[in-house]
Amino acid sequence: MEIAEREVPKDVVFSSFESEEALPDIMALVEKDLSEPYSIFTYRYFILGWPELTIMAREAADNKLLGVIVCKADRQNRRKRLRGYIAMLAVEKDHRKRGIGSYLAYAAIKKMKDMGCDDAVLETEYVNSAALSLYERLGFTRDKRLCRYYLNGGDAFRLKLWFTSPSWDDSPAAAPPLTSEAAGETPAVVDNLAEPSTTEAQKPAATSQPTHEPDTSSKVEQSKKGKKKKSG
Image 1: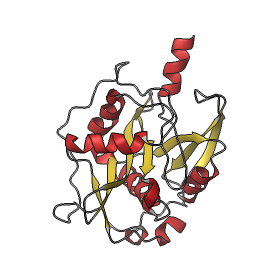
Image 2 (image 1 turned 180 degrees about the horizontal axis):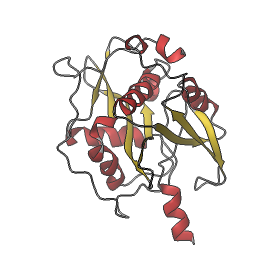
Image 3 (image 1 turned 90 degrees about the horizontal axis):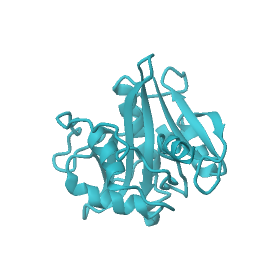
Image 4 (image 1 turned 60 degrees about the vertical axis):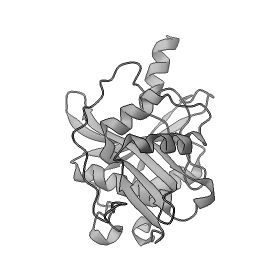
């Protein structure tokens, strides 16, 4: 796969979320590309609920946050299928075209598969050819078109990746390992944080999704449902 052939810049360090001290930097980066801001509760719902699925890319020299992906993995309906979900993916504008966004997406998807997820999903604008191309190179397929999914009236594609697909490659050569910023070790999964309850305050707001390289977007899974309930 094309993603397996890309090299991560040597001056970029990748690690999972470890402390709330990083939350302001994550919010500042993501909100640069949002047409409508998320609430603090949305960030905390995802990041504190699934810290191992929030992966950050930092400049090795000065520790500046260059990119981040925020995801979750939870059980679906009565079938209890474990599904991964990509909620936010953003890369600093001046550092796009370096493969940072592609590697963040790859690393998150690999973690989902390692956790035992059956599939992974996301939504992105149907006109966003850059995002569609990136995710399709990772093995995602267009599951359905969602009419008027965004508040601006735009449609979206729901993309899905089945981890049983023969196109998926999680071999060691596919991407370099994640490393801790401090010790150069694989970041430990933070499992001592209680998962937030899914109250209305914690559910994602209806908003456009942040971008990655180049201008790409997807949408938080639960937002549209909340919007429909209010409008109904």
